[in-house]
Length: 294
Length: 342
Image (tube, rainbow over all chains, first blue to last red; front, side):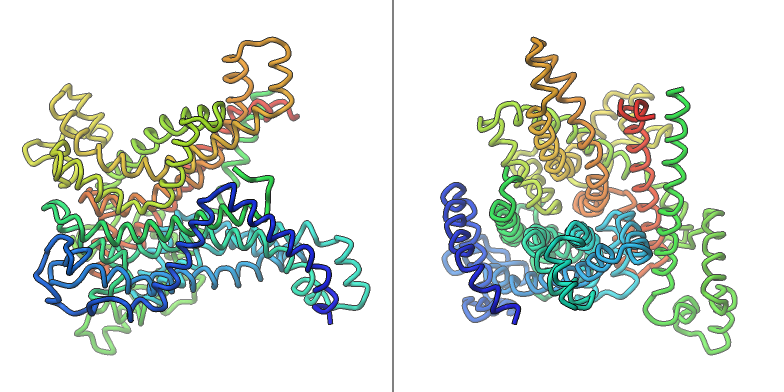
């Protein structure tokens, strides 16, 4: 019922948004490029395993430790595995870890933040203290501690990454909800007999989504880096699973003897993925909040 | 009077750290108790039977209630007891104390280097928008946050060690040919200077160069970004316009009016930067085989040495809190508004 009354009102706005989007794309071509790279990443994640020329786990797909050549575009590693196939196939796992971690912290962070921004009082006090305690740790170190204590598995990497990102979402949701707590449309919603939770999650929360999207995109890059860092030091993903962080770690032993391709290609993939999400985040911010445009 | 206000503020800030430290202790305690499986069975070893596991449980105090266990944990900590590191057989406290100077030397040198580069860069970028300085600043800021530190470190190693041969091999704090200097501060560079050993100073500096640059590249980004944004904001402010209209020299307006005010938000972001740098430190230490507390923790993780990892997490958190505390105290002392408010 509410959606039907909203649709005609947003139709012209969406047209304006589309114009605005084109304007931003024209002004900053990097944003356009980043969207193209984003689509490329998604394609690699979904179809990667069916597209690659070699089995990423097959040892002896070629002679060991050969530099990039026509048969093996990114060279081969110490077991003769094809680095190109491994880099492409790893996309799915890397994105899966960071997307699930970010989704978890988005959902729980927004619930905690919205409740404390809306109700204030002791809810706010307890949630605030909890978030402060997480932020009192160097975040990567806390993630190491959580994975070490909870057990060395991919799921725990996801949970640890989600926990260390929780405060960012909770704080943002709290700020965005508390400034709208007594806005006109909220009072109207309350007067028409909606319950408190319905007012909060049906009327206020959707308004916090635009800045949250920016936060999600910027946070994705950081989540990818974090998860790859954890697997670089040997947590979570175990060899021979292809994953960018662990591939860089395996290649690290060969860099001082000059076999650069083992490190450079997974490292570049990691960098491009992070770069893509950061650029999209900046582009979305331009779209959502023109004042903070840099 | 102003001094009284300031010391009260300092005291207030110190008191504010108490609940934070309490929170850290609770989290670390929960982490030690969240070990997979039964901690008593774990500490008793593989060969233990029911009775000896029960014995260990009694010895460790695991049969007591959680609050009582927490009190026991805190009183152990107060005596500096973090348990024994399985891999080396020494106490965790000893191990951490031995390795802390190596990590601190790396972290502080990297912070210093990134401050020295990032702040002038941010100021220049803000005063000359859309010139090459601005573009360079934007490039470094974007690249700095996108590059994984372990990848930057390895790339630098490949270029400067393998290709150019300028850097020494990544084998820790000193080449095998040298003996470490007599310990005064624990920082090899400073200690070798105190000892007056020029060659030793150069050798330790050479070992430090690449890891420090790697860390600095990573921390540069947030500092430069914040400096640029803060400078843009202060340069557009009314008081800078007034100062210009009053005919003050460009340099004076920039340094005394714009920069001093822009510095405050920069100091605030340093808290986040510390969090990054302490985390990145672990990765950089692993890449360069740096014998700090980060690589100690990584080695401990490999052999599931929980006491060592928990001790590491706790000491990193306490280090982070004290760095933040120092920054906040400095902030209280330099901010002119603090004394004028009352």
